[in-house]
Image 1: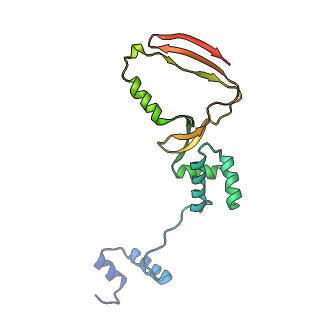
Image 2 (image 1 turned 60 degrees about the horizontal axis):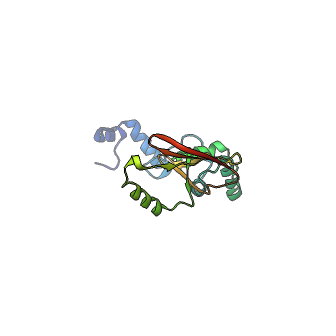
Image 3 (image 1 turned 180 degrees about the horizontal axis):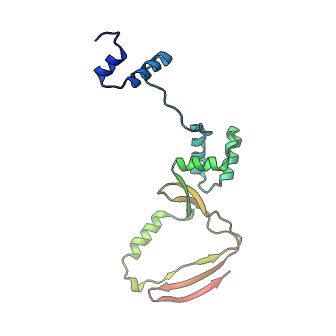
Length: 184
């Protein structure tokens, strides 16, 4: 093949349309490369990858953080004043969703709990009686929702005893409630 072939000859030899060949030649003359830079569709994103990583770090540290708190932290750290929907969209793109939070007691000891389960598992269910505490505290204002990756639980380690509360202590077996006390 000659270095000076015509466009119809190149199209016939390569089985590529003439229009595509003209486009490749135009791109070569303007950019010096045969590959065209892809067009960016839509507006460019306001948050950079560093901003999004900062938000992800905040959510990892405090999963029950509110959007307005993320907005304030982002403004203080970077000077960016973005809408809460922008932050929400960025978190959704990273795979985070708002889910109900499950709380883990700071006082809980996992090894002791597993040992207790092994010990209790040796007894027949009819011989077991459990005391299950139900409490009401009017001053507790815990957040019920948190951010977590899709398919994962949102967890926050927290103290479980706060302020004055009313407790109901029933003794429960397979047949139902045997006895209960109400305590303050």
